[in-house]
Length: 363
Image (cartoon, rainbow, N blue to C red):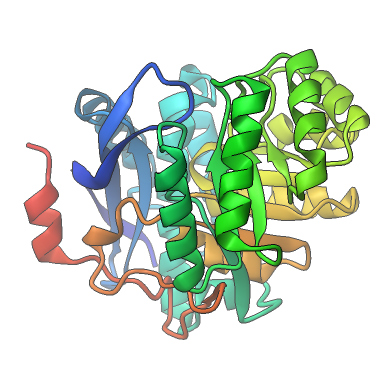
């Protein structure tokens, strides 16, 4: 079975509410995935996804995927290491970061969907099938620009929807204000619901330590990306100073990017992003590498794929639920009582909605 056709579609999907993600330099009102569909000579199809944050950027991303996609035309789908190596070589001139690795990841993921479909089993089972459901946390609310009232209303609503773990965004306010924001969420969700904090690389080491110590009495599940990710040594210094577990890794590319993080034991949870790590093939290798260091892995975005990945490995910890492009699916992923169940259908178990794809296509 060989790849016969590659088709890409750039989309512009409106968000439920505009928001600042990470630092407050940009307000996002839409999210921009590129869907790459591969069709084999036997008629089996599969898709992968990569995204950019703006309409003008997604056009560049689509161009990168179109170019890299030419490499897999004629590729034997069953030879996944060969396919990944060819994609890795083809993106070398792009530096194995940015849109080059995004393109590789989306295409690699689509190939895995085809393999699972061809074998008549869910992707998770093909990858190892360690469990059939995984805990999921809500990450699509509680951003930096939410007021205290909005934080409490949305946090309470998430608990009513069945979430037992939620994540909030911090990073641009004083420690006293951030503590009040956290306490507001804690009051809304109660003592049993876990709360993570994502700082999106906002602090220096000393600022992160000061902030972490101020929050320690209130029960934080993990502190994610407190400092810039380019030096795992800085993460280790923060981790050594705090009792709150440190989570990091979403911007790291390939197993080589994760090596220093794990060797320095700089994070107690490895956050692995499907489009930055190198697709399903490399996600699984990073999970195995992390297992050797007794580090659990959690996903970043792409919950439709991540439920399969986290469920496939013994050290799979949690799935990040982020429904930013759910509108493109006939039946999007759901969380029930804090859990995501692996679909039973062959492949991914989520099908693209052709009508929605046309509605949101960026022309």
